[in-house]
Structures are given as C-alpha cells and as structure tokens.
Image (cartoon, rainbow, N blue to C red; front, side, top):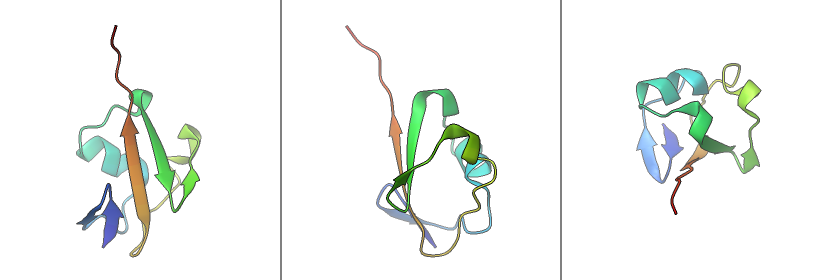
Length: 64
C-alpha cells in the first residue's frame, strides 16, 4: 500500500504520472512530495510507487 494524502491506496507498481491521471489530478496545478522530497514534474513519469511510500499532493487554487 502507498499512503497518499493520509490514506492507504493500492497504487504500488504504478508510475506517479499514471496514478495522478487516474485520480483526476491536473499535473500543471499540483506539487507532489514523495517520501519527504518535493519532486520535479519531470520525475513524475519515471517515479514508480512502491509499498510503504508516502505521497502528499497539494493542489494550487486561484482566487481573488
């Protein structure tokens, strides 16, 4: 299991990019912390989620 935003998800073996697409995230409007490291967007495709990983996804919001 992979802990994503505080919830255990069966995402091990998927690339981070694939998970984000399946979950409906727009990669242009998020930041991802992967095992306590902020990942550059170019690493999303080559980062494969493993059991025990911890991922935090933060969405940017506009406002005024």
